[in-house]
Length: 288
Ligand SMILES: NC(=O)c1ccc[n+]([C@@H]2O[C@H](COP(=O)([O-])OP(=O)(O)OC[C@H]3O[C@@H](n4cnc5c(N)ncnc54)[C@H](OP(=O)(O)O)[C@@H]3O)[C@@H](O)[C@H]2O)c1
Image (cartoon, rainbow, N blue to C red; front, side, top):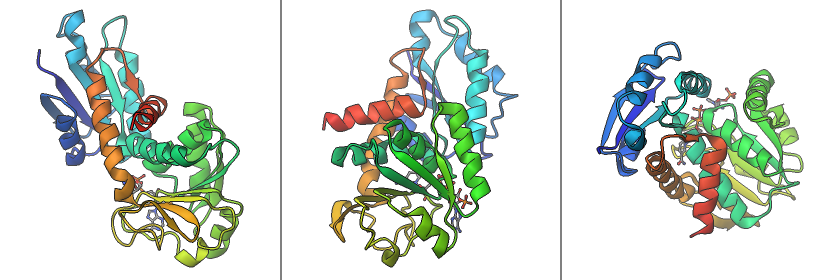
C-alpha cells in the first residue's frame, strides 16, 4: 500500500525543504497543505484515519511544518484531540526543522561530554530550534540559559517549554555586549540558534571564556551566528574549544530528519516531538 504523507504547514506556503526530506525519508506521495490551523485540521485528520483498515493505517502519516513553534504545537494538540481508539495515524512535529536540528546538535555535544551539571547557553533561543535545543539540554541535566534581545521574549519561551515538557530554563537578555557578557558567565556549552544571516557573537567575546568547552552555530547563512566558526567545522578545535558549524552538524540533522519520516510508517500510533526525535538521534549517533 502506498506510503502517503500529509505535510501540514502552518505558513501560507509549505516549506519545500521539508517536502524534499519527506520524499527522501521514504514517503511515496507527499501532499502539501499550507495555512493549517488547529480549527481546520480536523477534516484532514478524519480523511487520514478513516480510510485504511487497521493493519494498513501505518501507511498514512502526518508531518507538521512551518516557521512558528507555537502554531505547530497547537496544530499537534488539535490533531491528537481528533484521534480516538485505533483511529489514529503517526504524526511528527518539526516546525522549521526545530526538533531534528536541535536533536542533531545536542547529540553531537553528547559525543564529547556528559551534559549533567554543565552550564549551557542557547543564544537567541526564542525560535523553534532554540526552544527545542534548550529542552533537550535541560533533559540531559544541564543548567540552561535561553537568551533573547528582550528578556520578556526569553521568559515567554521558557514558560512555553516548562508547560510543554516540564523543564526549568532560565531566561536572559543578550542584546547588548554587557548583557551578553553576563549571560555567558561560566558557560560550558554554547549553542547559537539565531535567525539566518545574523551575527550574534563576535570572536573576541568567546575566545577567552575560561569554562567554555564547545560551541555550535546553527546559522548557515553569512554572516554566521558566531564569528570565528566555519560553516563546515565539525569538532574543530579553536581557542582550546570544540567548534561545530551549521553544515558540520547539518548532515547528521538530515539523516535524523529522514529517519524520523521512515519511522512514521512503522506503526500508526507514534507522536514524534522533541523527546522522541532526540532519543532517535542519540541512538543513531551511538550506532555510528
Ligand atoms: N544547520 C541546520 O541543519 C539547520 C536546520 C534548520 C534551521 N537552521 C538554522 O537554525 C537557526 C535557528 O532557526 P529558527 O527557525 O529557530 O530561527 P528564527 O526563529 O528565525 O530566529 C531565532 C531568533 O533569532 C533572533 N533574531 C532574529 N533577528 C535577529 C537580529 N536581527 N538580531 C539578533 N537576533 C535576532 C530572534 O530572537 P529575539 O527576537 O527573541 O531576540 C529569533 O527568535 C537559523 O539560523 C536557521 O537557518 C539550521
